[in-house]
Length: 263
Image (tube, rainbow, N blue to C red; front, side):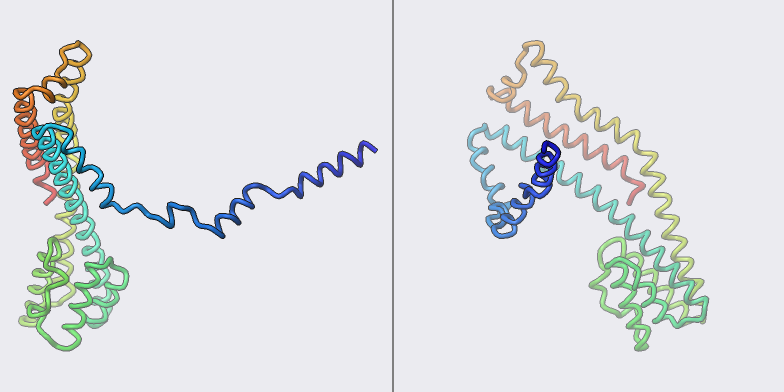
């Protein structure tokens, strides 16, 4: 009798509906509130506006300058990384195009084949090149709207010169494009090595930038109240604004020195 009772209890537990299943069914019928009422980013930005009236003008100006400097530095680093990625993709696309040209493929088909596996900016440039070559046009007079930004602007100029040399003097287009590819690869290699060599100076610059914050923390720990002086006194607010400008200038100068090889 006890065995049958235990068996029935185990079967009941095994067939008992789980809370996860009911929750999933309820979620399928009624989506969560956060999905139905999204909070726009502009509302978050507008919510910070009243805070500007709660702090002194010098403090808000110093915060705005620091935010602008950080955003500008992040944008420059992102632009440099995107430039290297685009150059690598262009070098790979030119390598594929050179292989097809040496195998006997027409230039337009080789450009289309290389554009099929390339990212969007590089693919657009190669597709324009294929269309111009197919219809017998002049590559120098092709629309440059897809490749006016760096670094594709420079690459497009080199492709135009290579195509002009091939048409004017009968030089093999594959060899000219391979020379352009080698030049792009050398530039990417140099920029990567320069970036790795400058990692130490960048770390030192970051440490030097964080030293004022460490000094404020030490002053607060010792009871000197530097935060009160900087935020609540007119002379301290002036020093805060001046120190912020000097920090931004130092960060910009350090970034200019350490990013010369990544351009």
